[in-house]
Length: 228
Length: 228
DNA sequence: GCGGTGCTTCGGAAGCGCCCGAAGCGCCGC
DNA sequence: GCGGCGCTTCGGGCGCTTCCGAAGCACCGC
Image (cartoon, rainbow over the protein chains, first blue to last red):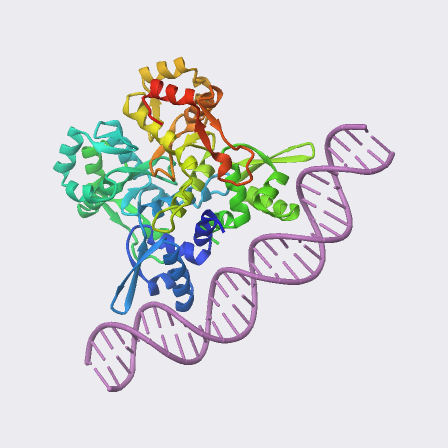
């Protein structure tokens, strides 16, 4: 079995795919929650999660009688998003027109969807970011404005990658990933410019949704020139 | 069955994965060749290729008694490369140290590997390319130098996307994709700065290899400042 | 302690997917 | 037109994977 086939097969089971999608926003869930989301019993879920962990797709953290699972890293989220893009191609089947999801959602810990790629476009087009070594660094103005907004740049720099692209499946253009993407998303959520609509939904897609508040719409326009 | 699981399962079978990898350079192969590469009989190969075609991963072209298969598009190659990156993560297992493959290879129709990401870095860092709308456009100097090299820019602009990033699984940084990536690769091959080492190999990875010629090494250094 | 809860392992059964051989269809070259 | 070749469809068999119920282990709170 080649590594490619083994990895794809791991994602290719409906129960495991549902679990992975539920973990896509970046949060951690317990084995029981994942079992409920996948619609299978506890024993089956346990076996599937074991396979995912051995395959390196999820990481485990045992705490008391709970076991918390999360995606093993940004690359995992990125690969799943890319596969979602393949699955959603119009040639294949019209994707259920989930307007809210296309507008904004969480991917790993960063903002995806129209708002996410819009931000990426403004930051790269308006001289906040400049390309460097396959990723991005902040320009002088970018650094100043990020700091003024309250983005925790020190935390962003502690991430394995400071700023890089993550292909957005619904927009087919990149949004901002890496430590900066995470900290920017954290800020937007903390300021309640964006809010999670249904973080508790059982449906794996619904729980990822992000929605701009009225105040957020004004702020995105004012700070980034972004009409969301 | 969700789209994600269905698509991943399509890639997750060893025979189908071998076929897809064989198609990754962008060339077209017949059903019989793919059967031999996958190590299965003609009937099984026929069924697998039918599934891949119905899933939208490969495209078919019937010519006489042969049926030619190729990947359905750049996004398919991109998704497979991303999955290869997941599969190759050091955390999972040490990837067979195929130095030649990491150095240079074909991905869809463009140059990947160290040479590919190196080119991407030089083009973006030295002012040939500037970000625009989630992709890239040529600057004035970039356009002039590409034209001087003999890159067919008109053909590049006819592609659905002119220039965008494709995540490189071995380098974990993007290389140049889109029409410009394809035309640049075409030029490098035509000038014999890069040559395919074993385009006929049965092993799906070996056939992708690209190798710089002595003349190519000098030219990459002179034209792009790239030490390959 | 002792019961309750969360999770895992074990055993067994059902279902699905993959593969091969045989046969059939279509195109090609002599 | 005839044989050969490439590919497909059909039928059957094998193997793997997934699931559930029952039982067992670990942790927590009373």
